[in-house]
Structure formats: structure tokens, C-alpha cells
Amino acid sequence: MELPQVLVLGPPSIFPYLESQFPNRFFFLKPWLYNLPLTQFLTSYAQSTQALLIRGGGSTQLTSAIIDCLPSLKLVVTSSVGVDHLDLPELRRRGVAIANAGNLFSEDAADMAVGLLIDVLRKVSAGDRFVRQGLWSKKGDFPPGLKLSGKRIGIVGLGKIGSEVAKRLEGFGCKVSYNSRTKKSMAPYSYYSNVYELAANTEALIICCALTKETYRLINKEVMQALGKDGVIVNVGRGLIIDEKEMIRCLIQGEIGGAGLDVFENEPNVPEELFNLDNVVLSPHNAVMTYESKVELSKLVVNNLEAFFSNTPLVSPVVD
Ligand SMILES: O=CC(=O)O
Image (cartoon, rainbow, N blue to C red; front, side, top):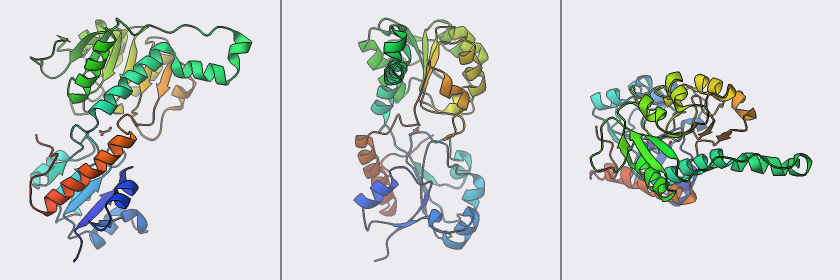
């Protein structure tokens, strides 16, 4: 029997694992094995392709130019929660269904956000470098960090990930506030309709929202200045939610206190100015990826593809 065909763009970091764990379910069309420009590959080999699996995280964009080369496309499965790399209006216009990672990563992303916050405040990575470089015996005591317990923390985006972050921070005795499009009636935290006000009233901002037209460079110079010189930014959302150049300037000039960054504007390229800053912790867009989430995500992707090919409802559809 002919296997259902799935075009792979990216490819997602879980792809080799997924392919090895679920053999003989699909025929994966892999453009990177052909020595052709992508659009030429698609017009030569993907004219009947109905299903597409794409990497998330912004480094592979599904543009209208690519969609134009796929006249039979009916399903896009992205291995991410974020869908900012997909041309959603164009996919909707063509009636293409979309599935993402649903809520699979919320706990891992929240764990990492809190980990980055603790690392920046308590200088875990900086202290590690100090010891490894043999500076402890040469220079003596390492400067103290800042306390987490009891801090006022602002969460930008109280969706599933933001709510998990809030839950964890409550355990540290933090006073949690948040900003989101609308006030959540059930959330027991102070709501600020304006991110500037949130920054002015908190000591750290944790960015957990999606990248949209509204959140593009939401964290700008004014917000960072409102956060202040001891203020910390943690970003597990998308790099483009922060004005990255301005953040670097604020970090260098001491206008904010530090940053824990899992995401960047132009991944995998990270501005080199950040490498020399001891008050910055860098992570390679890995907040969502644990061994367990890789296993679960592979199953979810396969379940969505199988649902599509057997004409049953998607397991984790993206709905407007
Ligand atoms: O950044 C990761 C994701 O959107 O899943």
C-alpha cells in the first residue's frame, strides 16, 4: 500500500526521533536531500502533497510564496506551540487546517522560565564560571545575587505557560501580577492592562505571550526603563517581543539589572554583545524541549497526521 505523503520543512528537531519511532507510517518528502532551490523542489515533487510538517521557533517561515507552490495543501502540523512562522491569513483563506503542539510544553517552558529567573537573580551560571575559571581562590568572595522569595514578578501573557509560571512563583512566595489582552476573571493575581504599568510595579518581567502584531517589540525602551536598574527580564516567548537592540543597550548601561533569554530575534544568531555580560543567561531556544516532551511531541505529531489521513478530527487543532 502506498504510504501517505508528508512534506517536511525545517526539519523539526524531533524529526529523526519521530522517524525512527514511527517507521512505515508515512512517506516523508525531504527537500534537504535534493540539491534544488526550495520552490523548484516543491513545484517538481510536491504538487500532490496534502500534509506538511514544519519546524517551529521562527527559523523556518511558511510564507505565501511557499504556500503558492503547494496547490494540494490541506494540513500544516507545526512542532511548536507558537504559530508566528505560519502565514495564518493565507492558510485560513485556502481552508488549510493547522495543528500545533497544544499545551504539551507548558510545564517545561514554565520550569525553564523560573530556572532562568533564579539563575539571573542568584548568579548560578556566573558563579559556575567564576569557580571553573579558578577565580575563587584568586579573587576571593563572589558578589551576592538578589533574592527571589517575596519578589514582585510580572508575567506578560497569562495563557497556559504564564499560568504555570505563576503557580510556580507562588510557591516561592512571590507577588505575581500580569498583563494580557483581557483580565482573567479566575486568576488570583493583580491585572495591569498596560505592560508599562506592570513593569513599573514589578521587579522582573517574564515574557510568556505569543508573538503577534500586537506583541511585536512590546517590551521597548519605556517598558525597560519602567522596570528599572535592578529589574530582570526573562523571555521564553519569542525574541521579537523585545526590542533586542534596546535591551542590549539597557543591559550594558545598567538601566536594567539582567536578563534570562531562551529566544532571540534572529535565531540561531545571538548578538555577540550578550556573550560578555555576566548578568545575562543565554539558552538556545530549548525551554520547551525535554526528553519527555520530545517523546510526547512525536506521538502528538503522528496522531495529528493520522487523524488527518483517516478523516477524523485533529488532536490539537489551532483555532482562531
Ligand atoms: O518555542 C517553542 C514553541 O513555540 O513551541
